Amino acid sequence: MESQFNITGSKVLLTGGTGGIGSALVEGYLRAGAHVCMMARDEEAVKISQQKYAEFGGNFTYVIADFLSDDSCLSAVAQASKTLGQIDTLVLAHGNVMPGPAVDMTLESWSAQIQVNLTATFRLAQAVAPEMIKRKSGKIITYASMLTFQGGLNVAGYAASKGGVGQLTRALSNEWAPHGVNVNSIAPGYIKTKLNQHVWKDPEREKAVLARLTSGRWGNPEDLVGPTLFLSSHAADYLHGVILPVDGGWLSR
Image (cartoon, rainbow, N blue to C red; front, top):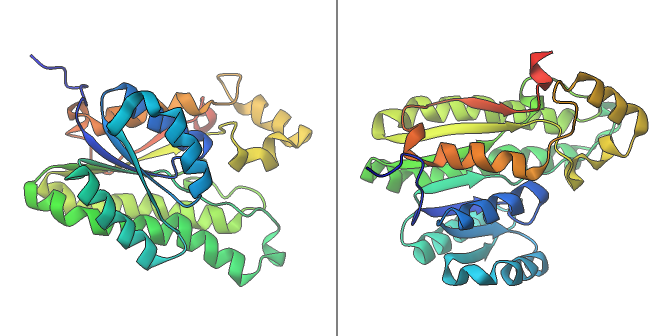
């Protein structure tokens, strides 16, 4: 009997694959035997990734997209679908944070974070879902945040967008679960990546974060690989609308 956790041969479209979390996810999927098409905006970073994953041959491909542009995102989905043949799993791991006091935040900064983190997430899921619904099978995994549950500090735009991702995940799940499509979310805790450097480079804030983490450490991008691959597998077939914290115990305090 084949393991419920086996994703060998699965076709995965993954966004944000050049970041700390995204690159760990790409490698995790490839090592699990999946075919991965990475969607990213930085072509130079993608070329570096292409060299990194050369050992996996044709199992790794990529498309370029500007997450601030609706047309660019939809065009990239069409290209990825053609490359993969079909999309079994969509992982929406891209993100943008522009920290700063809310009183000083420009409308441009606010709009960029909402567009990249929330609107692009919706539009990409909306573009991929019809084929999944048609064949009554598919996994969509959004990336939420601790700020899906909390307000954070000096990150109003990011918190608002990630709060929206949580509710979007549940809303899409309610509509698409009857058609065999699983929509769930990963909510990373404090992961030591460039996205969070405004926290871990601040000695006082890093100390406060560590004091609350029951695990006693910041997370690594690799800590998110197993939970994400699980949500891609048949082992998660009965999970719908779940926002799974991978947070080192942050929310348990």
